Length: 542
Image 1 (cartoon, rainbow, N blue to C red):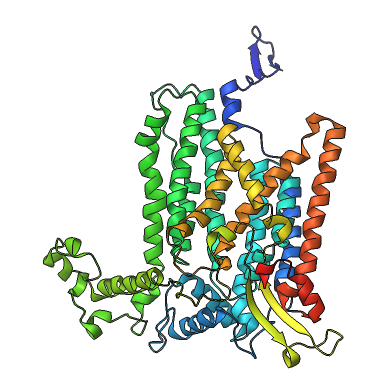
Image 2: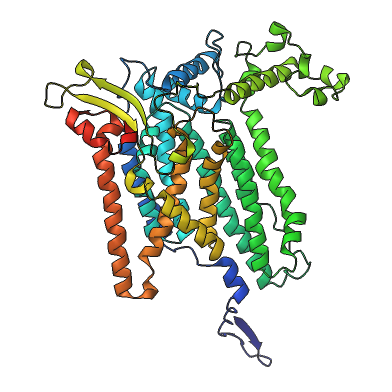
């Protein structure tokens, strides 16, 4: 602080520096709002993040164009890769009327088309965009884990676990859709996590400046751009697969729960009423309404095209029920004709398109007595009890193993050192969230169960293990939180910290070793029949 003293006439003006008044220490309320501060090693943390991501990029891109089915896509790539090529040829949307199996929105196939545009219609072209999505998942998981745990070390460990997960590795090397759903879901989760911290920082400032008591509902929280970003990511995820709808519902409830917790910690007298009056509508607008708008915006190439699938459905088929025939009759009858006349036929055609897609998914049941050989039900997914065989080659299709007969196969297997711990991790997470109010585990559980529980609503439907791809990052985040507790903190003493570090190091080494063992069957490398048999650990893997 500078203080100026004016002396008598003809004297100098003296300016002297007084010691600055120290800032008031944060109150208990502020500390409860902000919690543990983020690590201060931002530059080092970004260096570690980029280094681990670069290692993962090498492994994701290694020999990416192999294997193929005699130069053609393998497994469900056979659906999406040709559709992406149609999108590339047709200016943004599928146009093959002879192959009417367009049952997912366009975004992921448009992203696959970017790879095909760069590298052509080959394995690299089919899979390049998926590999980029898988690489981004590594980076996002590191940063999210660091923010959840306030530890750069644990963020790095989470990145290593993502690299070593068989599901995320192989799905990053397939021209399929689920890896794109996973990356946008994880990005939305990261935005919500960042929004949670920002809201608490704003409330802590309100407490510090005594604004908190100006209303029984607390202060308004201003524009929340991170929550807006989450809505954008959710809308794009719905443009990949309709499964994104479940995440919208789950994340709206999650944001409201986090807002209630923050207002309660700030000492607001009526936190629930405050959330309902001040936070609920903006949350729905940012996460649900915005997501719906983004979703329909992803269809702009369909509206712009004259040859896209079902683009002129109304003119071609003249369906019973007319423009609104895809809606329930009680709702369609209430729509005025004058309003219908204002709308282009493309709106009604898109409605019928969506109805056909819904009917496909609703009626995709397991045939009685003739299930798909690699079908699985959702109760098997947490531990990966029924993986999927994507490709199998032997004889002339697989050579170079050093014996007369070789096997080359790619199988979607969750690294057992992680996936077999899913049930213990979930049990511990539920206990911590419910009985210790550990918000970190609560957030991870919401992300995990939003990808799992909806599948239990229609168990007659055909289902496959690759649907669990979006669960994998949340499994890893949950395991990272557990490892953080095992690791302990420096405050607990050198011996405790050293023991924890040893346990965590041994576990991470076990995961990496498990991944290395699975490498041949995750990448289609040529191996002996004996080694192939040794890879199949459980009877259900055959």
